[in-house]
Length: 447
Image 1 (spheres, rainbow, N blue to C red):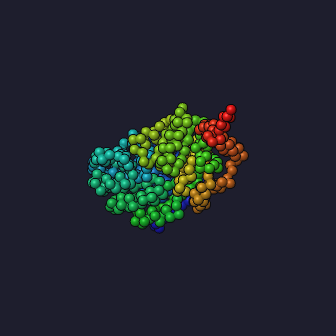
Image 2 (cartoon, rainbow, N blue to C red):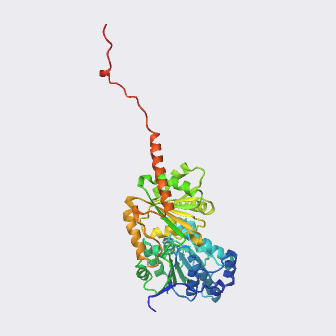
């Protein structure tokens, strides 16, 4: 078999869950969750994984990739358990490992598997960045599946807290990011510790041109089928994108007026730096005391991140976040996304947009575009043009104008922002009375 068997999947008759999955406990879970029919990525990836094929699957954000690998993984686990191909009593020796790039995504995947475990009865544990050594020690008890960050897995292996002798499945979520930004070395070390190899499944929403070559280098030339679901690279068609031009100094005033226009609808404000997250969050909390705001960036303590993330999920909250919230996080009801700053890495533009317009619900993306963004716009547009399946219009920079209605609204916001800026400046003007110098004061006339 060649290293990569390339398949692009377009329209096809949709299967039913009971045609894909045979484990009764999983069908009970699907019924309980209310899933009526599988998505395209689930219909195509589940059979491949159940056949024991290793693959790289590219599927559009928000299309159900997590269940596309979680369901077959659990069925394969239960089959191995029934066939007694592993020892369930062996401490700290999972059969499957799922790797995620962020704590938030790992927690989300763990939550799904935990719900499945109530039906299928298996042991799943979470190990991610920020976990204490005490939690790592708990790994020494029995477990079947592990959801973790790659660095923590490697550390646990090196310390003897994790035994990978029984690992048969190694699945990677957000694979494009995991194979980049330094994670590739960690993945390579983990894979080399698994003697005899294992079944691989890499899932991603975007595909860099060199993804296949990087995957081959990391996994020592392991054969990987390449499954691409049509439309995988693009933002959903039910997402409208609007650009509002403004200067860098106008952004805070534009943001206030933008939020007044959007009312209380759930949304995410993306910025590039963690310091900006804190500044914008503080500014909005003071300006809108009756509205709820959450914040999220990588420098926050784990407990604080979990608290803020939970608040955003459970309530009608506006989230101010860095790109840590752009990847893989699925939050229902996000009506809009605002790029307060255009991202430094062009691929994050797609992932940010993918946080809205999910599950068939219309969404909107707004971009604050300033003259200094031209370099970023060029990179984003280049990334868009290189994606052959992309269905997203390029950003045209300062000359961009949205549809007529949006153009009028953008103009109104700019005028209001300018007026507000002037009026606030006037509050600090101190009026002074001009005094006549002493030498010019009229001397009294002599009598």
